[in-house]
Amino acid sequence: MPESKAAKTARTEKVLDLLAKQMPDVRSALVYDDALQLLVAVILSAQCTDAVVNQVTPALFAKCKRAADYVQLGANGIEPFIKRVGLFHTKAKNIAAAMRTLEEQHGGGVPRDRQALEALPGVGRKTAGVVLSNAFDIPALPVDTHVGRVARRLGLSRNTNPDKVEADLCALIPPERWGKAHHLLIWHGRRTCDARAPKCAVCVVTELCPKRGV
Image 1 (cartoon, rainbow, N blue to C red):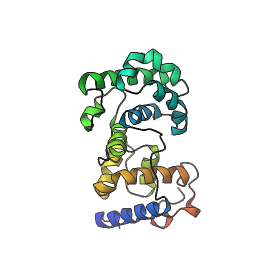
Image 2: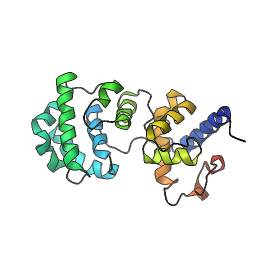
Image 3: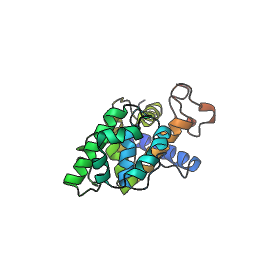
Image 4: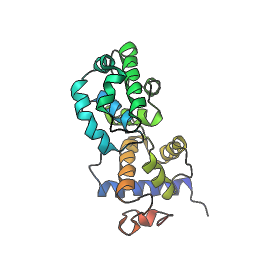
């Protein structure tokens, strides 16, 4: 018999409660001081590990304090700072273009509006959601590969499209928990629910998982 919406919602709440008890202080692995730095770091993190991003951003952030600094540096000037990051050539162009847009349309600041964020070069729905949630505490539940995998294994979504997974999760989780749920699911995917070898024997939510061991 298919799980009812009410039962799935209750199970989701239990999953989040157990993960929160296990990982009470989870937050983004990216290191940043403000919304502008976070925006740059998230653009760089696409198809790249947070660890590598954190290795290259200190020098870049020391050089560029404001959006105008990135504009002055230009894509060619940004590239040497981020050569260790995958697709650095394209990302340098996107960062320079995004900073130019911030200067021209937003007074050099990072907008708190999803539509404005997604209009920036190199910024999609996931990146916008990360910035909204982490920089401004605006409810958002961005879906990366870890969140999507964990959601499917837990039977919270059947979709592979990140936007559809996000919609499924947001229908089960109250908005005030979206930001924390994003981090809990990411870290659970990194630490326990591995793509190739999930550690079900030590998983705190294994009894709530219909696909344990898969």
